[in-house]
Length: 141
Image 1 (spheres, rainbow, N blue to C red):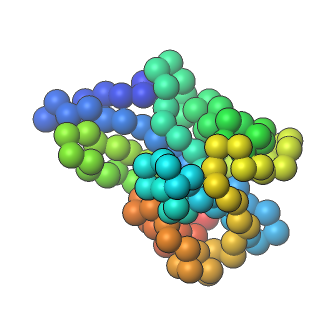
Image 2: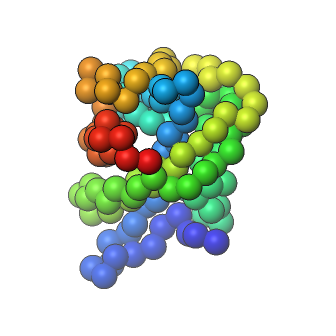
């Protein structure tokens, strides 16, 4: 099993975060963070921080159920994006997902939208999610 944190060669903690790229009819699902949260009001591919003992797919399934009330099938990894955040190092792991059950609701987010990849630049995405958006806009699968 993957651990939620490890260390880099410098001893800095590594925090793994997941993001689900849920595609339907040529559009992808993005969610806007609640105003009172970190990066409040910004858009992202939904997901969250890996807990100890979870694999990345388990983390993503749990987070999407908590935030959107949906069950998903987690597919292959699209990409991983390393980010430095002060003393911590985050790695965002984006996975293709398919809705298995439920309709996305705003349980842990402010708003959701189904967006064509070409239109993602119109949304104020969190920095790490911009790399995912670029990959989708380039048509890479």
